[in-house]
Image (cartoon, rainbow, N blue to C red; front, top):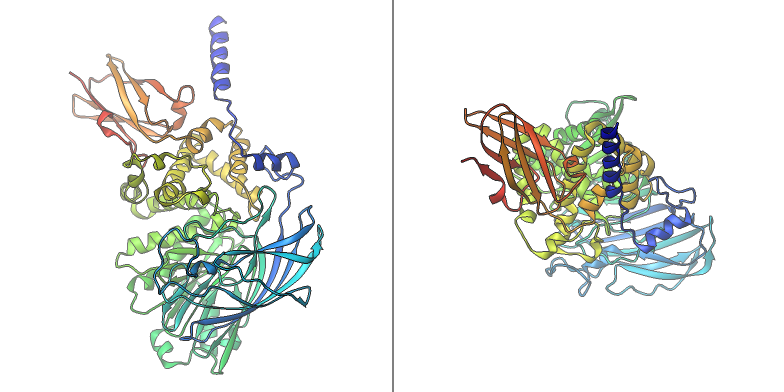
Length: 624
């Protein structure tokens, strides 16, 4: 009985020692106090977010680089606040000379930005004061917008597509990729208010979920691919091509909607001076599009929800000379199928994805802009990563600008697990080490050890990149090891069910995982996301006997990472003992492990796979 009481007492002490609270910024605390968010990881009873309906009409006439547009916006104020001002995002002003950017821009990248020709509120024209070099503009409303009321806004605008293409721009003289091209209302949320972050081209984006009706007016022979569902294929495509597109929506087979011969024959589109392509996309955070009279068009589809048999279209637009893109529809089908049924294991939420040959290696709702490469495995790897972004950030409404680790980190974790299926564990591990871990773990610079929770909008360079990609992905994968695959997936699904279509903060994610798993995970979150830790283990002492091997390991770097302990025996055999982060629950600085073995131990080694050690010189022990 005394022994039982002692064990219970020690267990309670361990749990108390690990019952930690998470640092929470003052503005996030206020959101919990207001009841818009709940400490159990769910949206609070007072949660709200705003919404808009955009009707956008743009005209493009390549090779002329000027895009002209009009838009009508119905903006709905679901907040409890009376709004006297609105904040608009003018993202393409980042192309202006003198705009704040984190890297230099060439003359070919510079443009005059977005030029507002007309602005109205509730059908009344108002003067528009130019934003200068800023990527945002605050406007005082003529009449305040009351809670649960709406306002009608409209813009006429134009801008020049940049000659040098980044996330958007000219792909060739008659092929443009358009993104971030329209004035939009910034996000108003419950913990920051208006999103006034400056777009520096390093961090990414934060948008509300909106409904879009898009019309793209282009000359005949130009094909348009865009976010959303094409509403009038019969009006803009010749019957044979409209039929091919329709067939591709219901088949696993590859359909060549428009081949090189078709495109060169100039008979794919309806032969009228201007074709107006109409698209509808609902409950999405943004849209993008590509126009070209040179790209060929492949398409197929794949079942993404096996319960309902729902299919999603997979399309590719590319130059016929891009050999890897002839495989891209197959890569896309595989990615949608795998992600929908494995991790994250949530059916692809949209009706289609289109992978466009460009330069950006960038994601957009239902669109991907990827460069062509000579390595098919690498081309697939990049496409899979960008498609993984469908779930994070788009489905989940992540604030990428401040908390990119909830965007890139999850996509990078999914990238690794699908690569294990594609290439096998050994090759996937080597690739992940090379692309995602090595640059961080082998660099002892101070900026490499900043906590992952650090808002990315104040970071740059390696500090931002490693926090958002490799370090965060390792944290999620370490959590997967800690909880086990089944519990991890259940908790991930609970978080996604609660928050998709909304705007979760990191604290909502942390609390939701703890709540869904039934475990207080704050000790883990503090260790991985709120610390200056890195990975560095050291074998401190090894004692062997006829029945066991006792190993004392010091955690120099601090991260509670998984590891393998490999025992090498004198008879030439080995045995591996895998350790999850649970090993460090009682003491994150040092641990002693008793491993049962009846063989004589010759040496001991610690290996981490993707969890690379900063100093491997102290990861081995040899017997005398």
